[in-house]
Length: 146
Image 1 (cartoon, rainbow, N blue to C red):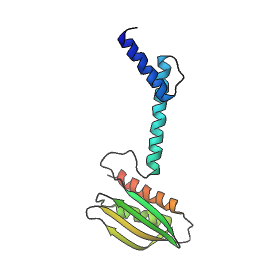
Image 2 (image 1 turned 180 degrees about the vertical axis):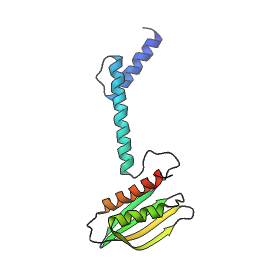
Image 3 (image 1 turned 90 degrees about the horizontal axis):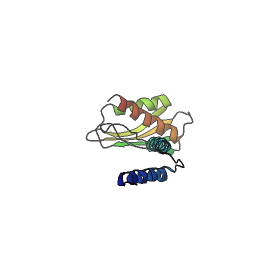
Image 4 (image 1 turned 180 degrees about the horizontal axis):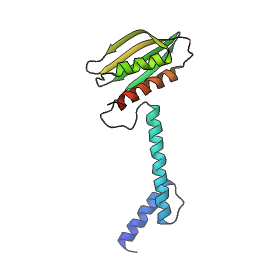
């Protein structure tokens, strides 16, 4: 077997091992590798969604969002290292759609974006995860307009 063929054979063996493929011919190994890559992409997208970021261009906003349940509402914190003109309006619109009243807020939009708000839940029965998803969606929508 020539050196080139040995290298190709070794490459296919590595692909089989990395993708847990049982295929024996080259075409099937490549198909299995393609499927495996697709599965990995889905996992990355799911994990990015869970942490509140997405696989978007470098100029998009990456923000940290936390929501804590209080006795009668929520403490919502949003932070981004960038100034984000218009983001506050998007987030406040999301609060309005959920029926949350802003009872107290502190906002900084100079060099970065920081929002600390206490939202009163008008007996809507929302949980912290619903509020966080609404804020993340507002950020995503704001990114879409950029």
